[in-house]
Image (cartoon, rainbow, N blue to C red):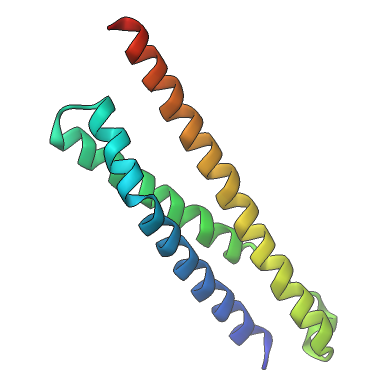
Length: 115
């Protein structure tokens, strides 16, 4: 397997991972947005924005992979580079989810305080 195939597999895994995280967030995010924003159009906008950010975060972690020249000949280096790519994708996705959750929690707490 050459580096191009490994890179494409990594991007595919990242896309699947982003879709799975989006599906896991769907019900909880819908109820949170319904609590925060009574308008359906605003709920739809924020949910689409969150799903887009989750997908872009997972894909950017996968696309930023850099494979060393030794990966062309050594299978173990290819495997470790792929795992490093997967870890980078997960790390970016984790930080993205934490930032999104923090923003929503702050907005929810300010909204509760004002009412």
